[in-house]
Amino acid sequence: MTDLNIGIVGLGWVAGAHIETFKNVTGAKVTAVCSGRKLDPAELEKQYGIPLKVYNDYDQMLADPDIHVIDICTPHPYHPSQAIRAAEAGKHLIIEKPLALNYDDTVKMRNAIHKAGVQACVCFEVRFSQHFTTINAVLKEGLLGELHYGEIDYYHGIGPWYGQFGWNIKKDMGGSSLLTAGCHALDALLMCMGSEVEEVTSYSNRSRSSIFAPYEYDTTSVTILKFKDGKLGKVASVTDCLQPYYFHIHLVGSEGSLLDNRFHSQKLKTNRHKWSHLETALVDSGDVSDHPYQPQFQAFVDAVKAGEKMPLTDFDTAFQSHRVVYAADRSAAEGRTIKLAELAL
Image 1 (cartoon, rainbow, N blue to C red):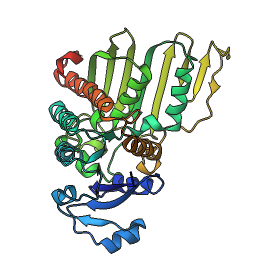
Image 2 (cartoon, one colour):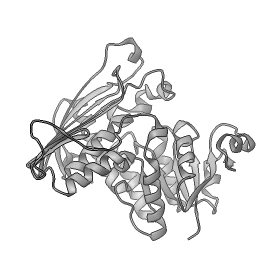
Image 3 (tube, rainbow, N blue to C red):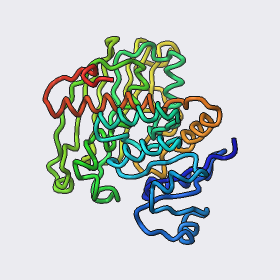
């Protein structure tokens, strides 16, 4: 197969990061963009350094046989319809998180993608970060033994200083603290724990700061997860904090523990009274230019060309993480524990 041609729909902050990333991905290139704005191809080439065909009509982009992959970078509510139409047109997909703002739409996306037989990569790119690549190696080697507890928390104040603030504050656009951002932490925890969630209990509230007053939904939530094999987990999603970005990680097992980039392992006979350190880059920025898109997109392109399911962030894996997010948001809204079985597959 020749290079995959990527068509990006939605030309904002995230799309710019995707375009720059694909310049360093082997076997694929961005060739077109679709936007509701009138764009000058010459100005775009000057801005991004590559020629880009411009569409203002999404259906026309989908009808272009030279586009093999649709990369969805639009605001959250548009993802389901755009993904379903792309799948029906036979296009492979890259979809920014969240997949959708409700479970029913996510199921419709899954059914359309399965029916069309196309591949989809969901942007839970934290799984491809150096930090979690190292953590996965630690877990695979059994240095922590069998995990029985884990907590991964997301602290990132999304205020007026972010370009997405204007639309992210709306309930029908941002959705919830977990959907708009904290789902990265929940997804990472599910990867580390490696078990199926049985039920979740979640609570939510919001800051009294006037900075975050425009939000139409609670901007802080904490979710307790009970896994079918007895493991426990916790995820805090705090998008109304006034502090540096912090992706907190604490994993506890039968042979040791890991705290961010520090660890103790009985198997390695490290000092139990003093943390040892992992020399790895941390997940420590909410700026999309710092996100590890390159290894993720390379894995996706390689998988499409090989006719294989991509590792770590394929649609079905991301679907299960979203299912837990929807259960958590329902728990907070209804004030009760939600069993995952209530969200029928």
